View 1 (cartoon, rainbow over the protein chains, first blue to last red):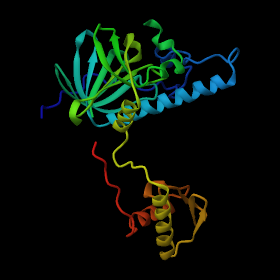
View 2: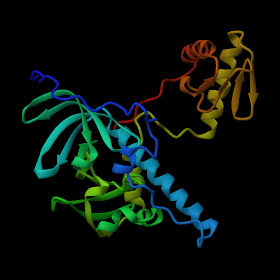
View 3: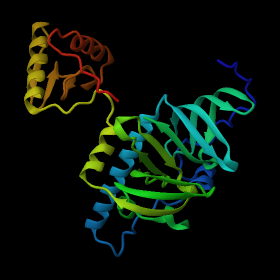
View 4: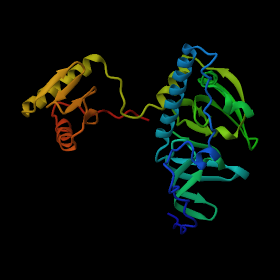
Length: 128
Length: 171
């Protein structure tokens, strides 16, 4: 096993005034769409809203299962500029903005633990 | 398409169980069967099956990077079933109603044998009025607000000589 490189830069800690998943926090507003796509209340009947919500939950549940299947597996991350790195997937946050990985193989060495920003990632793949 | 992220969940749903070609920001194209689209980040989960039962590859294209999605093929019951099976966690088996009933009976008898008061309330077993066990009556299915009782009952459930350990499914 290759020896690990020392930590280059710690990720910025949580905002001291923040409350984590606060939709009004600067982090959320800057990085997340301020509204999740949804039909507006007026002009659509409740049946369609129900159908839409059902679809949304089913889609989200399947996506969460994908994340579960990915835990502790070797994942290849394709980033911008055709950079490809491999790491062991640990966890992601609720909006899938950041991904925690271990044993990140980078061109300059192996990072023991790292946080990847999802905006930098174009796609990621793993084998089942 | 810039509008991929603005689609509504019902429109994303239309892509599920279809074979598509996704063009991403870096002009790379990815083929695969759509398993799901995350409604929060608009990321597309694509599955490429391997022939002859090899390992499948799952690729997730992040929502912000999606440029174009082209449908190549419609899926059918078979592909939907294959997609579902891939993501079922190992060890999860669908238990028939007879098996569930048998497990409930077995657990109830075991608890009574250990002098623990237990009541049947429909589908759940109510233990000493502070803990409930729901189907399929394993150690993970116990819930209580009292952690000491929870720990005790869980170890009891696990030590039930009648319980057969779950066979992990081949993943």
